[in-house]
Amino acid sequence: MRILIAITSSISAYKIPVLVSMLRKQGHEIICAVTKNAENMVGVKALETMSGNHVIKNIWKEEDPLIHININKKTDALLIAPIDANMIGKIANGIYDDSISTIACAYTGRKLFAPAMNPYMWLNKTVQKNVKYMIEELNFEMIEPERGTMACEEDGVGRLASFETIINKLTNNKYENIRFTITAGATKEWIDPIRYITNSSSGKMGEALYNQINSKNGNIIYIEGSVSNPLITNSKNKKIKVETTEKLKETVLSELKNTDILFMAAAPLDFKPAKTFDKKVKKQNINNIELIENDDILALTKDKKSEKTLIVSFAAETAETEEELKKYAIDKMNKKNADMIVANNIKDAIGKDTNKITIFFKDGRVKDFPILSKKECAKEIVDIAVEEWRNKNNN
Image (spheres, rainbow, N blue to C red):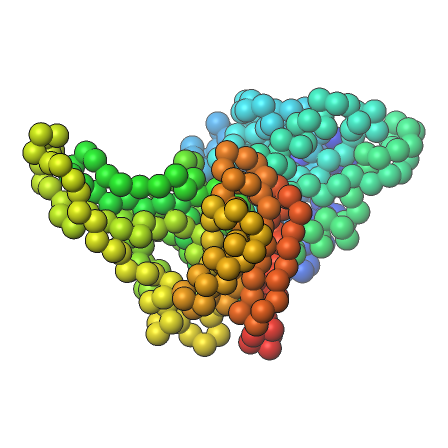
């Protein structure tokens, strides 16, 4: 694993050369970066000796003028340890005025941070608000500080997590050897060069699934339709942009051979115009639009997928009752050849940061969940799918 360790000016910075040495002994490649103030806390020469690599100090003076961008291609994960209250505030509030904050802004791989500071600073409401924002909005993982006696002789929570805790969290490659394909967003079907039919799918579920799998070092093919916020993937994973249902179908079927678990979270259109026009159609020249059915992508996977592949479908319905939702979901799962289906009532999810899901399985099992954040939903869905895939293949 290739790890970028970024060090800020917490007193705990002096511990990091030992952490670097331990990680290298486990076979990981380490690159270090320091803030100007961190240089007063930890020896750059010690970091270079322990890592065997040049230490990034000032991105404006590096030989590579795009080091803050290109470091994405050279590393699998960014660990900011220790991170002080100042750097937490910068990253959470979009202040990118030094090497580490700028690298964090551009980083698309897995991102972790390990706070270390005085207990009163750690409990400060602004610090806690910024920590929450980094986790919930910027997709950082936190390695929580521990309770103990600080250098300032205060006792409380704020001490840098133990090396064992940091290494276990950092090297948690739970999904490393599993190949995932995720579809996300809506498709478009063109009427003429400026008009098209689509739906309101935002792609947020696909993005949440991607972030969950990426945090556990899974291998991902991400097929993105029309979404509210296009995802930036890291160099380890592959993103394919599609527009029409036909193109989504072609891409999914093509990538199936490279897939262990398929999450069909996209919302492809069921219909398309029977005829498309090369020029803008004047309103007086058209009274109605004839629609024809698109191919059912999941139904077509039956003859293309490996016996080992697990198919996860999604059903967003407008059911009046739980029983009605169950009927819709099970019918869809059986028709579409899915191993499991994640169902929800549209009214529980649209325009909200939360969702209430129920998972139905081919063998009749049902797992119901309370209202969760979409991030929590993604974690449950991925963990269950991985367990099902392993059981299916005796892994």
